[in-house]
Amino acid sequence: MWDFFGTVRHRHSIRKYQPDMPVEAEKLHAILEMACAAPSAGDLQAYRIIVVRDPAERRALVHVAHEQGFIAEAPVCLVFCADPARSAATFGERGARLYAVQDATIAAAYAQLAIVAAGMGSTWVGYFDEEQVRAVLGLEPGLVPIALMSLGYPAELPEPSSRRRLDEVIGWR
Image: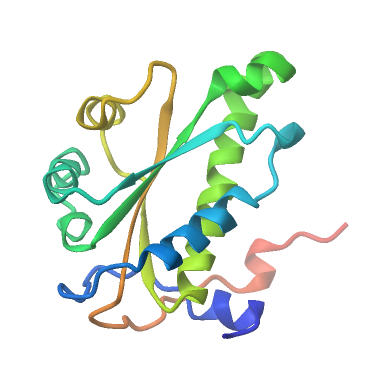
């Protein structure tokens, strides 16, 4: 296992997966545990995570995600949804509009790092039709899809992408 910094440095968007390597149940469980360990506003965990293993549903997600075929090639797709009503009950409109989205996003980020630590790869997908994702998965009313995350064993490791220099991103006061 890598330390945290190695885990972050080895995270890449994986768009090709080994077709005959399923995600082991215990590893998937550990990844989901880490997602649920993420901090959340008021410890409400105002999100739901839908685990999509069914090939037909993953193929349907490809079409609602603008033909990003790797979603079907990966053995698992996690769908992170905000639950605005859960957050609004404690924090009102700001909770519904912002905190629930932040909660779902932080859980997805923790999952993505846990996937790397478990020896697998993933790709975070934000380019999709929200209403169509709801329809494909039959989501409960009120849930808002925030991110799709394909995951599995990489068939290739892409070259690291360039990052902006710290002085372009960081402001000091």
